Image 1 (cartoon, rainbow, N blue to C red):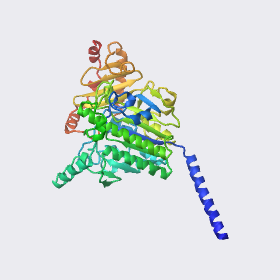
Image 2 (cartoon, helix red, strand yellow):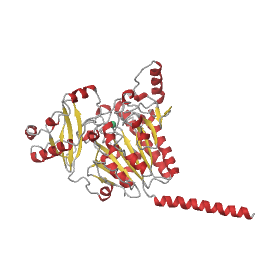
Image 3 (cartoon, rainbow, N blue to C red):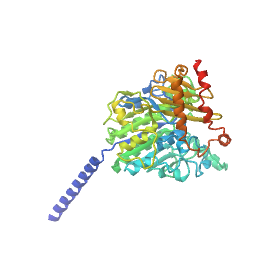
Image 4 (cartoon, rainbow, N blue to C red):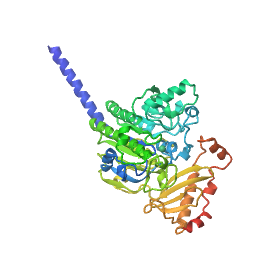
Length: 495
Ligand code: CA
């Protein structure tokens, strides 16, 4: 009896110690969870919180309303791969050798140089080393060879696909894949290949957007059991092509006549449903208050596939605002009071230093970052990039397209056309060229942009054989012509 009493007391002490330990560890680790929800090719005007006239996103809107909406959020490139490389490395894609997309054929992507160089430490690795539980869900597109795999780049958990996109209905694409395997097709497009979970092939059964939301919910529960803060990179491939939506999601948008637009709307709605489930999981685990949720798109919407970037000009791939200015909000109840709008420019390049600060850790030695920690500026509503340029540059055949913004001003060179200058605060649609009125301002901004290109390195790969041929022949990137303004400014002044 006495022994039993002692045992009971001993167990009580043990459980009390365990409670105290948990309390202490929680107390010692007040760092927030970080959840990045990235959409693919989502238009500026295709979410309720940016005033979409025909697409509803009630779950995102609730978060946006209780957080801060960014009206001038930029990504570092106007299409997928380079934009994601910038987000992960904190550097412009041209500075790490990755200004082109990877191919859609996985066998060609297995080559050793086809991925963002491992010497560029991803922010996931920094957070993992700082004690975060890290997971990447969805689209990768940063290298398919083993050394570039998410599990090797700072993610404890990966569920998704390594390529640049994916079909959405497993019952359809799995049949196509099986048929191609059966017929001996050597290079099978990665859009129909099986999904994977930490290098293990998975037979997914759900519509892909729902599958990724499900995995996010599961992972929030997993993270909580680990009693560590988590970093989750949830990279939906929606609403990127192929345009494939669930019937019930399309029915929500029966008022939209155009079938592409209706399908696209259904795809966005599926993401929104997922956001609702994720928020419910964060509430259930009591993590919502101390989770920094950042929602954005990897580049602008594509006009040809149902997107709308109003009131911005241009489409995915452009250096007009519509190519690389994206919908974005941040939600963090324990620090950010809701109902705010942040109009100063910010960049996805800012995430790296911002997350490093949130995790109370350090930027790796010798790492040169292009962005800044924005959290204090967001809280104080001040311009963190005052007197600094934010750039977009895309190589085209025969010329380079450029956008560069500093404060209220932006210089743009689109197509093989003259340089233009806009007051981008007043003229979001880039309609009124002021280059003729302020030639010195235009010249100075172009010069500063040209200086920025001196930090670039040679591309590590090309998207097409044509790109490589032109580059090797000295016809890309043609910066001398791109930044030659003396003739072009005269033309601009006629406007
Ligand atoms: Ca994209």
